[in-house]
Length: 238
Image 1 (tube, rainbow, N blue to C red):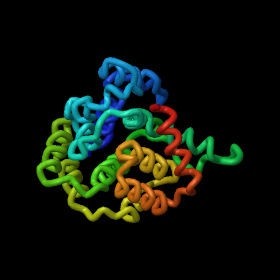
Image 2: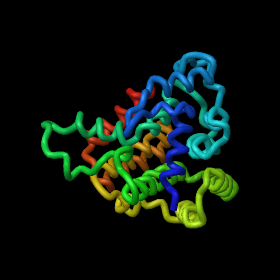
Image 3: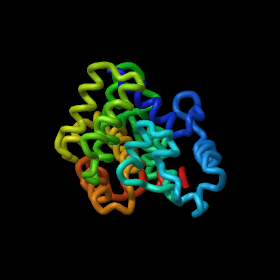
Image 4: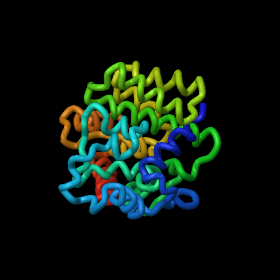
């Protein structure tokens, strides 16, 4: 499968196509916000921009559909949080560093996505993609047509036959937080899966908030760790 190639394209969509990530994972989140704001023609916090939906902002691509299709979600003060996806591994690792009480041995934590290579990178990409798809499904409103459109968008990014079948399976599988959590290959993977989910869900939707709470528990995240991950998303895309 070529999951990493697909995830890279989604991350670039989240970053406004700016290619602002640097080196092995560094990225300029302010540039992400600036790029998105320039597309809106003003400040990201302007209430006057609330009429522009996220699907239109992202050109109707796969990320736009995952975030904003059937919900008709509008661009408001906190809608730019999906930009955090452009540096999911970096932010999840930063959250861990802020959370831990002392700087101990991090070797058991796993490495950020941006530092992985080969099969490890491919596996982590699948885990994050799966978390994103499940988060998009959390409100229970993706219908067959939208599912087909999302699959077509991912295919258009270059998904091979194996990945195509995998994506189809994710849309048909039960929405099971425990089953999803079992895919995490390390504590860092769990944090990245949760952070990616946070970027997709609508904070004001009770069903999606409930999904995040279930996922946090299933992943074994301490409530303070989950809160720190959400804070990273909020503070780096506000």
